[in-house]
Amino acid sequence: MATAPDISAPLRLLDLACNQPARVTDVDWALLSPPEARRLRELGLDEGVDVALIKRSGVLGGPVACRIGRMTVAMRRHVAGAIRVERDG
Image (tube, one colour):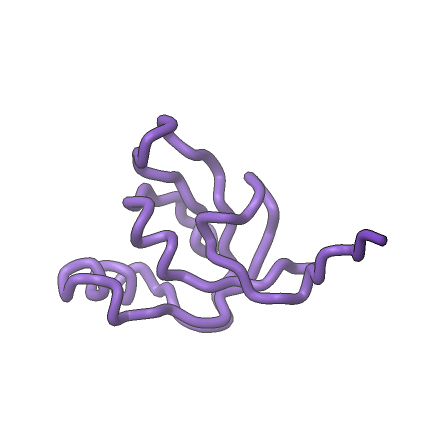
């Protein structure tokens, strides 16, 4: 018997469906280089911020477009993979 997926479980921003609103629960800063971490902090990305994955580019590891609050930014896939989120709603 199949069970329904737990929609409240944290997942990576990278794994989120496009345009699914979510909230940042954690960022694994250790997976990011100092310039990448600084850029995310400068963009205001931290726990509790509203985010959404807008678009994936390419099949083999291209960048992704994300909405952070009211901004739209492009980021590398491994950066989006370091951001844990929970779905809104």
